[in-house]
Image 1 (cartoon, rainbow, N blue to C red):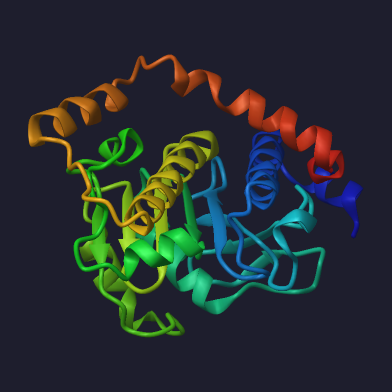
Image 2 (image 1 turned 180 degrees about the vertical axis):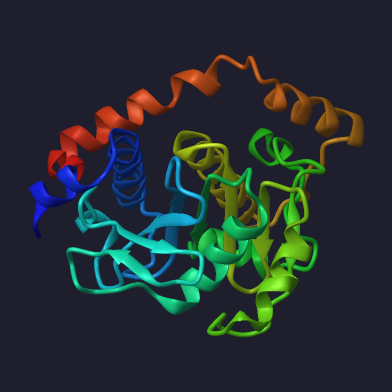
Amino acid sequence: MQVNSVRKRVSEDEWALRKDLAAAYNAAALLRMTDHIYTHFSARVPGAANEFLINAYGLTFDEITASSLVKVNGEGEVLLDVTGLGINPAGFNIHGAIHTNRHDAICVMHTHTAAGIAVSAQEQGLLMISQHAMRFHDALAYHDYHGVVLDAEEQPMLIESLGNMNAMILRNHGLLVCGSDVPDAFDALYYLERACQAQIAAMAGGATLVIAPEHVAQRTAGQFANPDRVSRFKHWAPILRMVERANPACFT
């Protein structure tokens, strides 16, 4: 790949975004939140009206670097792709729809993990049985499965299901989160995934589950929603250090 050419062809702000987004992909690989070359993390290019970064179609998450991310416009047209691999149309249909209709959704992350898919297939959805789950109390949307999102017909339904929420369970499919930036989205994705893992583990034990009372779940969600929550500002630096130790090349 022409690493130097990418660095020289984008703004400082876009390069910083590329490094954060590449780090998120690599962190997801380290945390086993990947599905081979499928699923996607995307982000809106700073200062651009309708341009986004997304992964090249054919790279595993641990192969993704700041330079390999593909820049596309709102119509899915490739603007910059040094890999020559292009993008996954189904991935763009999901991410493009959200970025185009939710301008506050700077970063969108979607996964197909075993726990996420398992909970998405359970009629009751996410249960308030863990602190992680209670973070998403009254802040989680659901979208019914209609098949692989290969065309734009499902986009309006996706947007309607998501509404003003920043987290959504795609029935029989997986998890999706939106964030004001890459660190914000990754933090939400990590804890939604952990909530799903906890639910599947608890149900596998066969014992009666303790569901948190409504007022407790509501209070806990409010604590996590606090904009001054200390962990909101502390979680990303350790993620970057973890990725730097494992694969420093992702930042190039």
